[in-house]
Image (cartoon, rainbow, N blue to C red; front, side, top):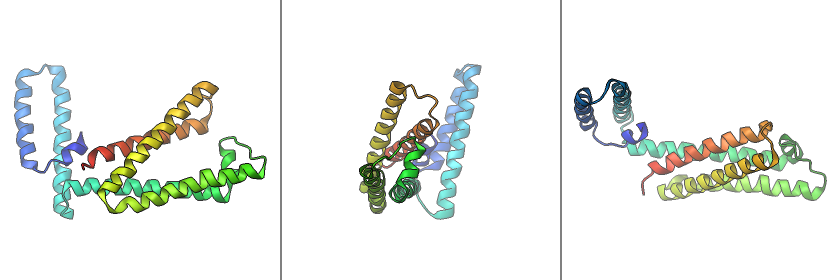
Length: 193
């Protein structure tokens, strides 16, 4: 993948390998595979250009670019979770109504403030605290992968059990959970211990 190619430290070696592969591909592959090999080579060249641009423009190694991606991802997740947590804490009735929940008693309102508000604010604070060190970032990314994956699986199970394929709120939330879990998983895989 392009992200993996960015982690390779020597662009000249990649160019030589790509040229050798193109010579071998021209001799041994069928016509239908030549197009796939050509697009793969194009991807390699683009990755090399991005890598060289990172070196030239910022003086950063590809590892620091991947660290920057992980930091941006964690900061964005923290901001989103903090925003949602504050919204649930300040306006619990309106936020609960987005998914069709009715808060009929003061105990229900307090529960929404504590669970949906306080938990998300606490998770956002934890994510912000982990931005300092790589090992802590790995733990935060692993936590997000597990949380978003389990939420997505539970939501899919709920949609199946409750017959709710017309529930746009839950379908949108499912999409966001799957995308967030996928991005966090990619970032986690790229941060090597």
